[in-house]
Every structure is written in C-alpha cells, then in structure tokens.
Amino acid sequence: MTDDRHDETGYQPLRPQAKGLGEFLAPVAGFGVTFASMFKPTVTEEYPRKKVAPQGRYHGRHQLNRYADGLEKCIGCELCAWACPADAIYVEGASNADLPENADAAPGTLDADSSAGARISPGERYGRVYQINYLRCIFCGLCIEACPTRALTMSNDYELAGNSREGMIYEKQDLLAPLSEGMLAAPHPMAEGTTDTDYYRGDVLGATQAQVDWVREHRPDDETLAGAEAVATGTRPGPASRQHELRPDAGPGEAEKAAGAAAVGAVRAPAGADANVPAVRGSEPGTPEPGGTGRGTR
Image (cartoon, rainbow, N blue to C red; front, side, top):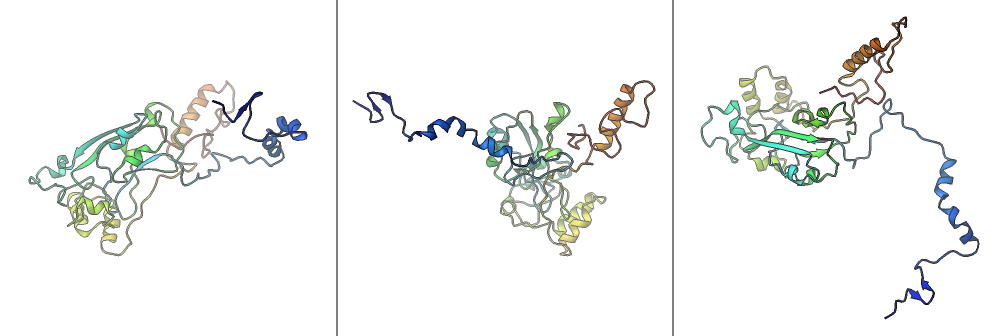
C-alpha cells in the first residue's frame, strides 16, 4: 500500500515550496514582522501614572453581585468551588433562618416561597464565607459559568498585586459589589409578595416601602435608608449595578504606604542627610509609589 504524499525520493510537502530568489530569501522572510516594527514609533503605557482600561472581555478580579434592593445574589451553593480547576475558591453556605434578626421567627416563615423574615439573599440560604485565593486562580472563568444566579462575575480590575500571601486571599467583603445609591443594606426581608424566582428573573427593580420600614425599625441609623426610600417612593429611579473599578492613584492605603516608606527612609538615611529629601522613592506626600496598587495591607 502506497501513500500519494510520498514517492521514491521521500516525503513531498503539501505546501508549494519557493524556488529561485524566493528560496534564497526564505530564511530572511521570517524576520519581516521584526524589521517592519523597527521603524514604527514605540508606544509605552505610563502605568501606574496613566491607567488604561482593558478590553471588555478581560477576565479580572471577581465580583459578588447584588439585586436591585440590596440583597446578595450568592446563595452559598458552592458550585463555583466545585467547578474551579485550581481549587482557589472556598465557600461556606448558611441558612437565613440562623440570622439573629430571625431568632423569634415562627417555623416556616423563611421558606423559599415566603418573603417574610430577614435575609442576606433571597431564598433559604446565603454565602456566609466566600474566599478566592488569587495565588491559585488562573482566571479561566469556569466559576462564573457554573453560578446558577449570576452572583459571580469577573470585572476588568487587574491590579491584584499584594505584599503577602495572606493579602492575596480575598474575603467576601473584598469581593462583594459596592452598594449603589438607592440599594438597601442587608439583612432585610424580601420584597413583599415575591419569591426567589422573581428575583432570579429580574422582576425586583428596587427596595419597597415595607423593606425600608423594616430596616428603619431594626436599624434606624442605617446610612442606606434615605436613598432606598427615595427609590421606594418613586422620587429616584432604581439603582444601577456597580463594579469594582481600577483604583485611582491616590487610592486606599496610600497614606499608610507613604508613612511606612518615610519610616524606612528615616532608618536608611545616612548621617547628615537632608531631612527634607526622601530617602525612599515614592515617600513624597501625595506621590504614589511606583508599581503600587493603591490597596492597603490587609
């Protein structure tokens, strides 16, 4: 049995081969892109002084989302942890019935088909503990595909450097989406007359007056009451979801970093050095440390 690709002289390539001058210049043709790039202007992004947002499809820092009335979408099902190929996610679910606000609730009050009782998330469960170890995460996105409630998504935040291993393990409070103006801080009851399915379908567009009244009764000093009541009365439109964004140059932790750099500079400064000249770059007041993320040490 013979193969048409072979003859008596050996293997014959399927692609036509260059001959003559083309065959002579073939080794040089591979450097065509290199030579063409040598004469183009160099574009350097001045990071971190000028931060450029990546493409919308970029897989960056994770975010735990909220519903329009402020309840969390995560129900603590742990499917994201099971789907993670790097074992970077740790989740512990808990029952809404175990919240201190529900200590006196009657049995059956916090069933999935009931809207009464304090909740962290709609339904019977919520995510009590949520951790992502970014020393293990490979940003594949399988966790967000596994999430049944779209609670977990990935933002465009790529500033994830840290000073310690412990700081690279993000807790729930680090991943939870910020409360938008008009959202009501949890825990509080679900919108009256709704079920968790109504939340999943997007039928809840904001906090209701009954939810506002409940929070005012149990937490009269809650800072989110005014904005949520404006949404409930129709004075303000429903809240829009927010995402974690790229940190500004003078973000959280800058004062602590500047103070620490100044302290190190005081120790390293030689005898007789001018006290007004910083010994460590980035210790000038108001100047971000080169390569810094603006994230405080946790």
